[in-house]
Length: 118
Length: 108
Image 1: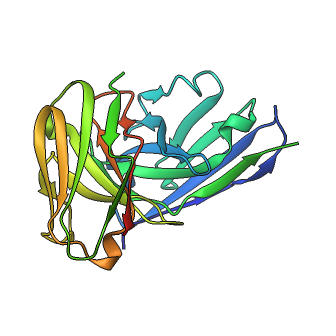
Image 2: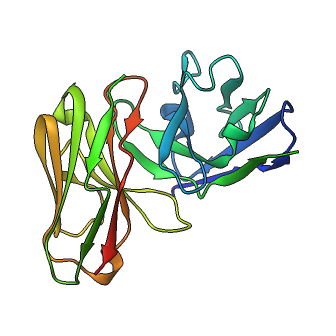
Image 3: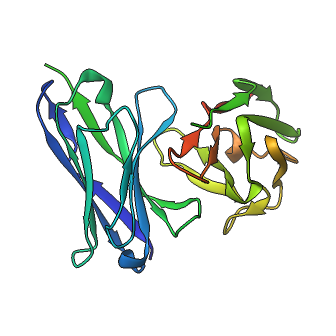
């Protein structure tokens, strides 16, 4: 079945780094654009980053530009989010989501929790 | 950036009633690139409506979407107990993809 499974979340100190992963199954990963969306505790959804299906293009929210890097390994069917220089404002549940090109986010992972705290 | 503003922030209704949720965009959005999501506590969002009015797979027909330009509406014709959740609108025409702040639909 179509599935996305995030991992890599945890508690990290301010200024440190963390890498999230999102493993895809049940669909042609290499044909799908992929996004990261986050949700701070008690807050709404915030789009974070997108990567094209072939990895040729990326785009970021202003709030993470220059600190976060989205990447993918189509041979491993895995999406990544490298997060550097983390601050308390990055504390959130991070979801990966599928985008079949100009389409809504039709498949979401269950989310992984990132807590930035000293 | 297209800012989406949802109203009301909270909607209190009873099972069987009709719910009308609104989303207003700061600039015109092609209806082809407008969606609604439902999120229950502890769960990921679920796609309900795309293209402003098309129901996603397995979404009951009591959910309907309408609108164009800057004003969009999600209607739930007769509320079921499982419909009480938070609802988000989204535009996916261009970066940055943006969501509304959400409408919480609670049981009265």
